[in-house]
Image 1 (cartoon, rainbow, N blue to C red):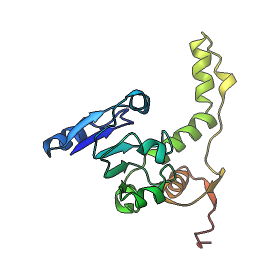
Image 2 (cartoon, rainbow, N blue to C red; image 1 turned 90 degrees about the vertical axis):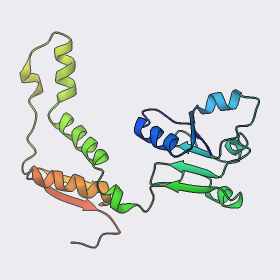
Image 3 (cartoon, helix red, strand yellow; image 1 turned 90 degrees about the horizontal axis):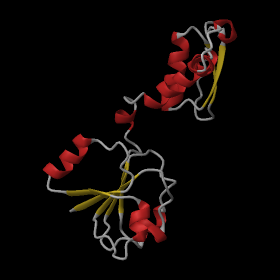
Length: 181
């Protein structure tokens, strides 16, 4: 089977090796190259992420497509009705909660942004790059005893709430699906 990765930025070399070791013919391209080609692609599987909404127009580039793989939990970038009609299977991370609960990347990034802003790190960094060294301009605040509001207490929101608790913050949240007072 042929696999075409259309959004291959930072794709795992281990994953590529695994595909190839299992007899798959792996290749990479992008939507622009695909659109400029005069020949339909004969891949059985495409790997996509969130670069574009995939509908009938994109499917016209393929003559043998059987699977779409998307390493996402949301599927609003895929025309699900169309794929069902054309008997194209979708493989995604949706519903793989045990696996996803072990991935802290989004919550860590959120927490990193919060810390960098409350501690004024980007502004201090740029100040130093411009030969400044007035640290009094960048006195930050501490998080201890501060209040944080989190919208959505799903997988990522829960992790951010735990990080906030570790910093002795008071956590408030809104999530219509969580009944915990």
